[in-house]
Length: 477
Ligand SMILES: [Zn+2]
Image 1 (cartoon, rainbow, N blue to C red):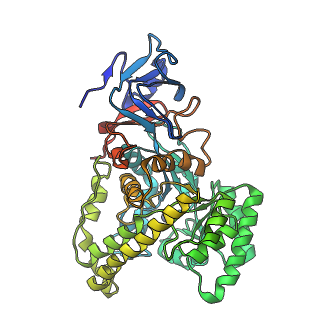
Image 2: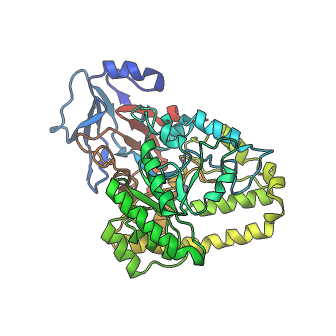
Image 3: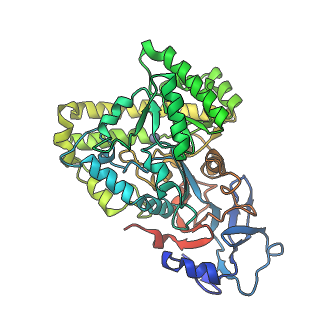
């Protein structure tokens, strides 16, 4: 592989950031093919970055290089916008220790300790994202600290991704808080959905703490409550429209997803996975211009995690760029520690039966993704990172490759992973494409992602807010 040739001063690495900002006139990337995220591509391009923003994109005649500029020769490489993961959870780890409602194991992984560790070091996930080429994430649900702590503020730093965070989920299953409070009643994961007054108060509360969206966790309601809860969802839609805050909804059944669309949901955070979508669904989705986040791989991660506990079989993590830290890998590689806590509820037979069902739901989700794409729907790349075995960072490669396997073309996936994600986060004017005036968040690849979306694994550099890191600098192990 060709070494990047640097003409003037080199400013990379976290320790050099303040020095860089003060001494470099501009950073210029020359010779690469620039894939702008909007469907365009320019070979042998010159890209100029100044004060963290793109100031010129064009050929060598259009974009001139100053004598004091730092020039990187990137011939033979490909530059894309940074990736956007439009569905993550800072309050989850990527293993079962972060989901006590799945397997509660207070003797092995006390949840109060897990939460304290998550809250103390959100930079852990920022590092895993940047290491994998992700420069912006949408946290679509978690305890209030995911909104109020520095995790979702302070994100202008070059060692942080952009973050938008929804905070606690509104749901009729707020009883599940019993797994999450762990001695701290100030950090519920769920807010109740059982009366109109509760919902009005919850939305006001979420706005007061600075939530960027209102998330309703609309898991399938019992038949006798469906009419009541669908009507209340319409109220949430009305209130969020009036207040100008986006409404995002978890609804994986077709009936539930249609209820969300009738309420005016701005984003469905998962695929419809129980049956093929119909004409009414597609019409509602298009009429609202609702964002559709397929999350194809998270379900198999959950099922594989449970199976690995059931038979005490550690699973390998596909992490080509070494972005998962050793502590998390250690937990994943010791599933037997959770075996006793799982009890008789998780037999190997049941676990393997659930694994077999992955193929069915994946086929439904793939068909629905194609249907949404053919209808001109607004699709984003979204992993649900933080769930068991859907690890923060590299899971974005798995998700994009699953979208490709489902039949989407690479150019459509590149748009979904960049500008569409930025727009879903309300940041489409600031980032998501390589255009003059936008924040310089970009990736350097050694292979062409227009041929095969797996080229995002071939990541040589990540630029965040104008600061260029080699991928090796960003590794977590
Ligand atoms: Zn999620």
